Length: 96
Image 1 (cartoon, rainbow, N blue to C red):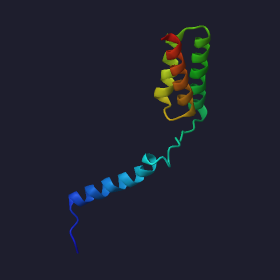
Image 2 (cartoon, rainbow, N blue to C red):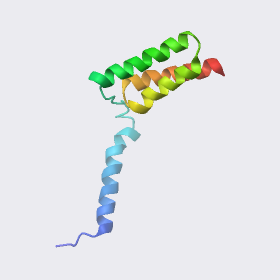
Image 3 (tube, rainbow, N blue to C red):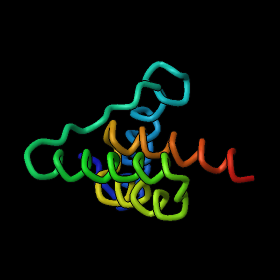
Image 4 (tube, rainbow, N blue to C red):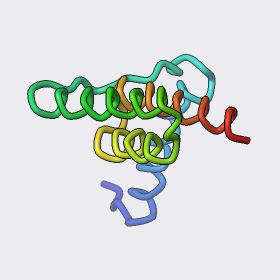
């Protein structure tokens, strides 16, 4: 029986990671999975987005950006973060 060395384990792990990421590299798994929020987290994310949108309506972009960034920081990989990022890009285009 062949002895398994640390190097062999490292190469096996690297190969497994490469194979698992190969779908992404080849574009077969390019769909982003967003996590779902519920309860207090969902309410908080919605409240921050709503507040930021109201601030945009009155052209207080700096304060609105703070709320959008909070959504992204506290609730990454959610639809709320995606919406917040889109609004940030929109604000940056308007204020340039």
